[in-house]
Image (tube, rainbow over the protein chains, first blue to last red):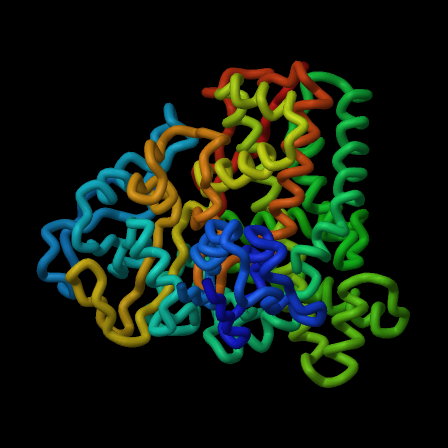
Length: 64
Length: 418
């Protein structure tokens, strides 16, 4: 899977970091998303999909 | 209180409706943890959306389904601007405050994003996790006090309210000794039954208090968030001192009533489900506690007056067109009881996967303080029942004063003993 994040849409809720902390982080200055791993390993599939689902800003896109 | 179950003649703006139900509806006092029966009935029969009648006679649309709520709350064609003429205000008091002390929660992007981003950093996951030991100390000290004090005791005053109040004071740099002042005023702001004058006065008093405090932080900065924001934003011209004071009122009070109500109401709900309470008391698994927090947020959904918006353009929902300018109410309490999103939704189940609930809302306005609320609730639920294993209600559940008249739901008091 490939992951794309939209930092302009992100509202810094941190939900993605809770669901998949090895894939997403937040900028120190304003809490906006940082993508750590754009091609996460398969065992994180469910966690990453959950991150996209709970993101309130719809700022995470997944392509298979 | 008005009789909210009364059927009222439809407004001329909605000729299709035969009768409009007044909103919000009353809960059934025998089921204090469930949304109002009338609201659940509307959810069950509602396709397409219907209009409801508000206190001022206006007829906004009511959205009850989980999927529709998420879609609308994240839709850029929906406005949160409380100054729009057709914004569906919760009370006369909230309407009276609409031009005063406006914060980013009542604005649309891009202004909303600009202002929200100024205060997002302290609520980032890592920053909040770093506060966990301090929160644990606050929780442990309050429980020490309960164990040394008389029984029965009111859990709201002894524990549920001081926990979030002390935590946010420490974070912002507000003296906790001033809590009688700001707790009294924040209670007025979240009541459904306050006059417009009292509500306006309470908000102005809080803004003045924070404005004065920020002035002192500018002159003599400390290691706290208000000092940091004062130096970063006010000293550089990003915000005026008054604008920062207005935002700081939001930060100070938003986490008070909400987290306090979740701690006390969650405890009342768990005491009614003793086998699940026992699991929480005995577990050493933090994921069981964090899962229980999500489920209690879903099940109790204390923001029970609906999230309120205005359509900025025509939007089609469930085959009906919501016209530009019409008000929309998103009833997240029944959204969180939607069986398409949560199987067997009316059952409290701490093992459920509930993280996709809408208790914090959805879309760009989703609660800013949610990471802090989560950690506070994890520490509170994870510690209180373990340290006071015999905790029980000191009165019958039917004697507990629930906040039926609150903009935010909860209990006024929770007498407990052990």
